[in-house]
Amino acid sequence: FDSLINCDKHLNKVQKFIYLKSVLKDEPLLVIKDLKTTESNYDVALEILKKRYDNKLVTINCHIQNLLEAQLLKGDSPSLRNFITRLKQNYNALAALGVPVEAWDLILVYIMASKLDFDTHRAYKLERDATVLPSFSTFMDFLDKRCSALESLTKPEYKQKSFKASYLSLTGATENATLKCICCNLDKHAIHRCNRFQTFDLAHKRDFVTKNRLCYNCLGYKHTANSCKSDGCRICKGRHHSSLHEEKQRKGDGSNGVNQGLNRFNWQQRDNQGTDDRSQGNGRDLPQPTSTVMLSTTAEKMVPCLVSKADTQVVLPTAMVNLVCHDGSRVQGRALLDSASMCSVITSHMAEKLGLPRNLANIHIAGFAKRDVKITSVVRVEIESQCYSMERVATVCAIMPREITGPLPQAFVDIGSLNIPSGLELADAKFGVPREIDLLLGADIYFNVLIEGILKLGDGLPVLQNTLFGWV
Image 1 (cartoon, rainbow, N blue to C red):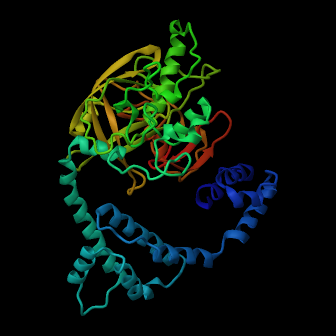
Image 2: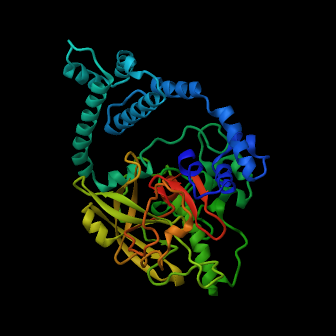
């Protein structure tokens, strides 16, 4: 905050005070909540926070605690990489605070080496010169080399995994069933047989299923409802469980295309969030049964919503990301983050660039005006952040046979006029320049990439949200 906001000469104290309140929460926010947002109170608020929280000894103790409580390693490359990052971050932070960490090398190396798995610890013992006292820097060099070697060795193994194995791993379909009912927290039984669940009204049941990511088609765990093998509702044969059936069906809605579209969107959105345990241990090969999903943005027609002025423009969140190819190399792509879209989509052009193994599918993607696009193949894509080197996510993307949408934004946006704080790491530094979209990240992954941090630039201006890819 001090680097981005407090030292920004272009902001007055009232603006800085607004930013300060927007990034605080819990007790720190309560400490200054009653102060009016004025220039004089900004300095008062900073002084109050510094006296209460800017304690050097507490900060040092936190970094020491983080070092000592580093988790024991499993021996795989992701675990080792996280371990290395944690050691470096806290060691460097202590050094920056003036702590003589170089005098701790023997103690630190002894403690951290004891946390290594057997194979890594043995390799370190064999490589180290026993006649020379170990240093923290040589210890970290060894870990970096070993981690790089493990990462290069695991890539061919990942490449040869079948799509079926990757897909099941992604959805968690092979995990064991839960030991207790998540509704009553008692002994193991199916959710639709739970006495407590049966007492809920329809709205409460639907809300419970959505919040707990259950399959809307069978109320099970650990698979997507679109691929659920259950017959669905015994009453109306719809794609929902019988306990979620609405008795009072409205008649005459069949002619209302808008209502039908919204109803389909609501149910399919919930289906897409669910998972099920009925398929545990059961291998399911794609193509999956035909399903329809909704995209909120289509190439045929882009409709800005809630626009009251002709010159008003809605800026959608975009991010520049690295996509992992089949051979482990990286290709840069531009992603659109869209929480209103039910699935993630990648252009066929980008999918060909990546060269990843495809799997057959039978999906219809519906956009505005019920214009459907038939999807015949899907691919599992790994996405890396360009801002944070350690961050990587994966999702299954439908391969769009044409462009996902037109160039975004629809018109040039002058970023310089938005008063974005200097030093803020944007996920797409040129988000105001209309450019093509290579992939769309939908609701299946959208909320997994959000991290804490929101900045309001002012009335009528965009709101900045922090993500694993940077600020959007």
